[in-house]
Length: 367
Image 1 (cartoon, one colour):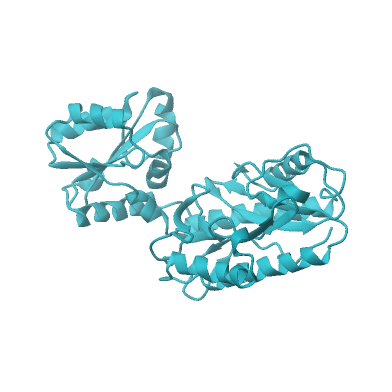
Image 2 (cartoon, helix red, strand yellow; image 1 turned 30 degrees about the vertical axis):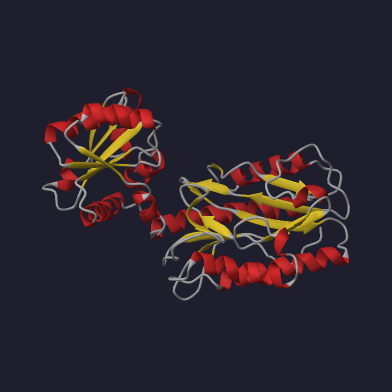
């Protein structure tokens, strides 16, 4: 089933009409991909509100000559225009149409760009509208969930093969493990990796976003793997923490604590739940154990065309979860200089309970 970009643009046009906006100039390339399927490095998209006459027919994408063939292949259902300064070209066309307002993505537009656009369209009211397309992107359609599911499966399979072939063992370096895991994700169908793979052994596992080094894995170490695969532009995100050789009592205890916290966070995922309440449900487990100050980050985030997207799930997060939102749940406890544990899944929020996409066991595993 192909992506239904037309339905996505229709939803955007309805959102513009509800806000009494005439049109939106989309310049965020991720949002352009979401709305059209175009994957080039330079483009702008002009979308008119749903109450505008011939709104879809007037929708136009602009890119430069390098992508003349690509835009025709990827966006056959829209009129394409060619200009190097794509956004400026579309603003000039807006001036000829004389709309009363033009919304723009103020969270990605620079001050200099805004000043130049104001000169190009002096009679149009330029309305800053941050995050409108990102709001639509929070709810994933069946096509998107299918790609997320495939990306998670590639990561799951790569990790399973890494373990089966003895790739996680004392004597290897963090970099060696990371490179092998990334290669295995590609071998299992990934188009790319979601982000630089985190491999953190021993004391490094207490660093939430440690970058792999030449540090050697040792017997008795925690080894934290945070990684993801990308398929069709959609990203998976998963963290598993292992013990090499033999687990000490303190390692079993902290692992069990984080596992309980992660389960509480997953159980709290429901449409309509306040994101801060979901964070609190998981954080409470760690707070009650006396280690609240060692949970150093938010509980999770949205995931899709970007590895970090709305909604953010944390203490200061605002808003509620929507049915169909794809999110991570990833509590952690980190003992500086000693070691730490994080357990993370990618899930889709559902009325009947969250759909788990990352299926690798979360039981404490000693390898």
